[in-house]
Length: 391
Image (cartoon, rainbow, N blue to C red):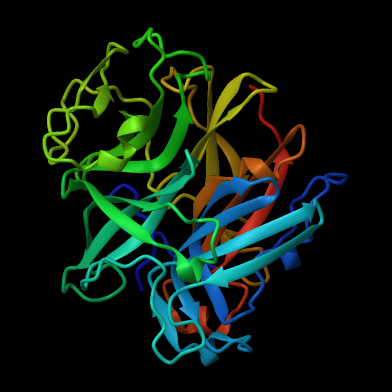
């Protein structure tokens, strides 16, 4: 079973069982049982990027998803396993959130993903943002290799989806797609920042103050330790992101200057900056004004913990990674532990945080399909809150 993670060797991390509530006392948070409940036929998914759409309203992006009839509460009732789905959360108060799930063919015998390639390839969502009345989402395009098993897939490239009517019901969304790159050892969009510069100020490399979308980009292949590079595209070029010969894409060089990306069909040049190492496809980079720091939250391969790193600048230098949180599901002392556990997909969700708090999610799974089907504690985002790291 494939899930939306390509760390180190483009392989997915799968895994585990159980739940432990690690919340510090006194922090207001929707009760854990109220996050990502099994309803409307949604029976669990991984990934879980969140994109703020409006005050108290966010879009959640899931990767591989079990779906079934509207009243289903068990994966034994699943009628489909689709490669992506979404949810809209509305939170008028900190402890009152509702989730509405969507995918194509809801309630039918032929469910399909929310975002489709129109071919046998499929999309796994990366990060996204809203700019000038349009929702933009980076989607990793994948294809089957015929190898069989859980890892019989490979990376094809990244497409940028645009939804100009995203305020309408998702069943009415008009989605267009643009290919950013194809098949190169570079995955743009694992985290995306929409700012003028590293601190929200005018970009020093462009005194005229042009505004950019910054795409953290996973660089490397199965033979190297992956790291993050950085691309940028002027916001006024977003609708032409894949235009042939578009010379507006820049990459960050190791000397901290920007240069044109020679071709969106190629990997990043050898002199591109190693912004953060290691890298992952399932991660976030977010700015915290209260501490004047950027925080990256990410998994490290198949490690048993989520990690974080801090930097005063989006472009670095980043401090060495520190352990953020050990996954309780991967501890043998956990009553729901099995030897087939893996946890992954650590991401921050800054719009749900209170002052002094860091809120993130991760997902656990199993290499044994029967565990995934039978144990409903598996295969859904787990919410964690911790004190905000400041050093």
